[in-house]
Length: 263
Image 1 (cartoon, one colour):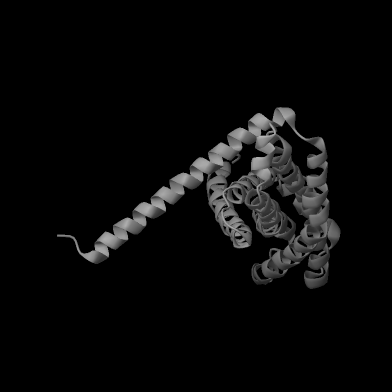
Image 2 (cartoon, helix red, strand yellow):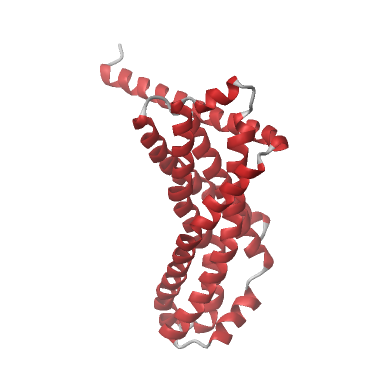
């Protein structure tokens, strides 16, 4: 005869599994409906999303990139000085930012900013009945609201990654000059000689995957909101938590895959 503790544990595992399956199904549904809605994409909503998610996030993204570049150099300087490998700092710092720290930090910051905002706005529309109202008058909310937001968030992430990579590399060169007195030409010389286009491609692939995860997760969470004003806050919080979890999972999977494919 099973004990109450084991029965409770099995029930919790069953509920968790059902929630996980439901979440995956919701993501698949949102992805499919969004792809179908791309044919009738609302361009005004797309333009608003690009300004809201992309241009509005530029100062935060650049500040994060600058700090990340300086931190990478400061941390790397400890080992560079110990082993006397100053000439490799440009390669090590550039590889760390382009391949790992740049996409990961940008994804986490954008999950907290644009992911939470997207989920909160969609949850507000869902709770307030506007989503059902659009369906009632024969309009597709995925073509009008969801697809433009997903495209805007993905394009914004890729565009922001370009600026953040450039700012981060420039800040790394300045930090290397100030901390190790490493000439800027030496920093960029090893950066250009030892880094390959596949390293940059890996960072772009990761950034695109993180942007897609943020947009789909936040959209699915926002559209599943039920209740009153409390549901809006819960949707924003869940979008951040689930988005960050998805980013870490994708980072592990993509690092393993890309290191084999692009090696």
